[in-house]
Every structure is written in C-alpha cells, then in structure tokens.
Length: 250
View (cartoon, rainbow, N blue to C red):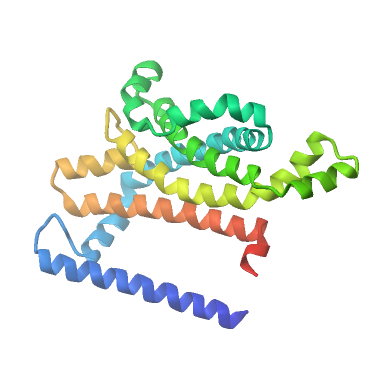
C-alpha cells in the first residue's frame, strides 16, 4: 500500500512539473505580458488570496456546490423513474429531446430579469445545465438493469419502493458519481460566464476585472483559483466514488 502511495505521489509530482515547465516554455516563446510565467502568476495568486481573491473563491464555490446538489436531488429520482417506468418515459422523453439540445446559457438574460443579478439567477442557470447532464445517464443506467435481477427481487416479495431502494439505486450509483464529475467541469464553465455579466463578486468577475485593467498576473491568479476549484470538486467526487463503489477500483 505504501509503495502504491509513493508511486501515486511520484506521478502527481511529475505531472505538475511537466505542466509548469510547459507553461514556462510557452510563456518564453510567446514573450507577451498577457501570458506571464508560472512564477509571477503563482506569486500573484498567493498575494491576492490573502486579499479579495479568497472571498471571490468562496462565493463561486458556494454557487457551484449548491447548483450540483440541487441538480443531483432533482435529476437522480427523475432519471430512475424514467428509466424504470415506461409510461412516464414515453410522456417525458419527447420533452427532454426538445429541451436538452438547447444551449441553456441563452436563458441567462431571462433569468436575470426574473430572479435578479445575484446568486439565484446564476445557481438556476448552472442547475439547468447540469440537471440534464445527470438525468440522461441515470435514465439510461436505470433502463439497462437486467430484468431477471428485478424479477428475482420481486419473487421475494419486494415492493416497488424496495426495488428502487435496493436494486435501481445501487445500479445507478456509479453513473451518478461519474456524471457528477463530468458535470462539475461544465458547471464551472457556466459559472465563469454567468459571473462576467452584471456581477460584482465571484471568480468570473475577478478574472474579467483583472483583464479589463490589463493586470495579467492577477488575471492568471483568477484562472488558477478557478482551476483549483474544479480540481477540488473533482477530487472530492473521485474519493467519494472510491468509497461508495469500491468494486470499480479492485
């Protein structure tokens, strides 16, 4: 086990070193203030973190996490029911097919008019995007459950609630966590866009403000902070998946 941990730490160190080296070489090749090297950017990041950047980081973290939780609470039950109840799926699926391809980002002006320019509109927009990214895989996973498994549980006297709780939920759990990890990146991308419009807080606002002032080291400090937010969420979800679905990592 210790050897595996050392190997994992070595791979992480190598990856980070490779990334920083590539960044430095690209900065030297471009030779433009708009692309500072990793040392000035990281220096600005830690300097700004002690100032206002930390507050923007917390605001953005709150918006993303709340959006992911709301999407999860709404999408998982809907996906499970659609995957197992054919009549419900026939009724709802056409609506999903119509709405899913529409880029939800276009609704931001409407949401700002209806909900204001504060957290509500941004959280709602992220939830709209992430909801469908979770719903569709859960629905397909629930639909793909072996019918013989369901019938065997029914033969033991299981009711519909028991089937959802002890068969459908364990079957779709890996897909839930995988779709959440994928959706987290999309959530942060939508967050950035929403925070650059009529906003005075959040990493998107911070980054755009630094860009407008041509303070590129601070701009990259915002980029690093947003990347760090995505990395933290992704890592937490991966560890949660390892804990909840250990058979995937045997």
